[in-house]
Image 1: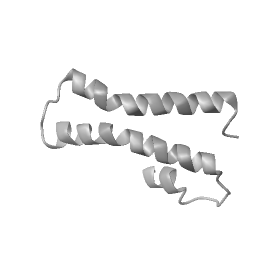
Image 2: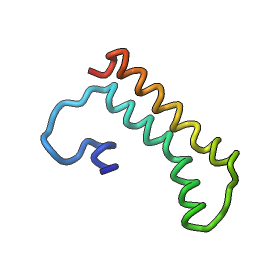
Image 3: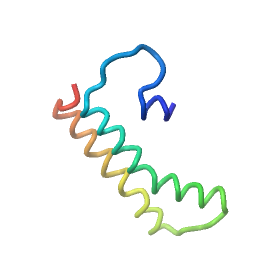
Image 4: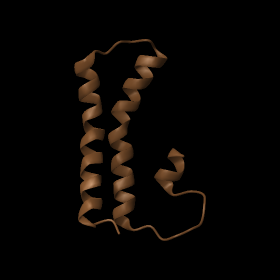
Amino acid sequence: MVLEFVVGAGGARREVSDATRRWRLALVVAALPTAVLWLLEFGAGLNPGSLIRWVGALPLGVAAALWLAAIGRGDLR
C-alpha cells in the first residue's frame, strides 16, 4: 500500500502530475520521524516521552495540513 502511494505502482496506469509526485514525496519524507519514533518505541521498547512524540509528529501533521489545503484550493486536480 505504501509502495503504491509512493511510486504509483499497481492498478491501471494513468498520468500523474508533477505536483502529485512532489506531494507524495513530501508526505513520505515528513512521515519518517514518526516512523522512526514508532520503531524505537514499539521495536526497541524505548519511551521517548510526550514532547519528543509531538516533535516527531509535527512534520507529518504540517505536511498533511498543507496537502489538504492544496486539495481544498483545487491545486491537485
